[in-house]
Length: 151
Image (cartoon, rainbow, N blue to C red):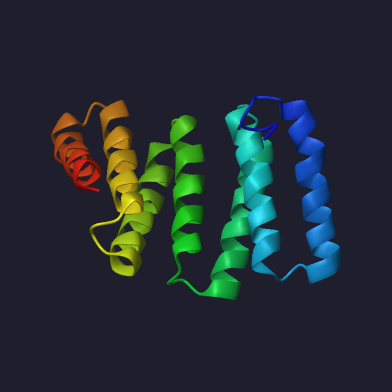
């Protein structure tokens, strides 16, 4: 709630407490711990604290890969989150393969007709758009729009 209201100083200690509790009660090797890493990373990301967010996004991705396997929607979300972090920093060459992995996984796991697939098309399009690669961005934006209209 605090995070969504922009009350970051209230949200941060609660995210940290949730992470600590999950680590203590569930152990480090648990999907809920990965979610807590992701949540705290997203908080830092939204504030532009990229150096704090990156290692947490990476921990979440690594844990999810190890615990859930590569073929899982949460792994796709982790790829997407890390890509978005890189994109917001202008690290386009690092963001692109991660966005592509997220899209590919989502298509395979969720099917083409899913809102997360539309989001992946849109994110990849925005990456190309921000680099002036309009001929690559346009068809992806159109796919995202078409999917969202249908869904």
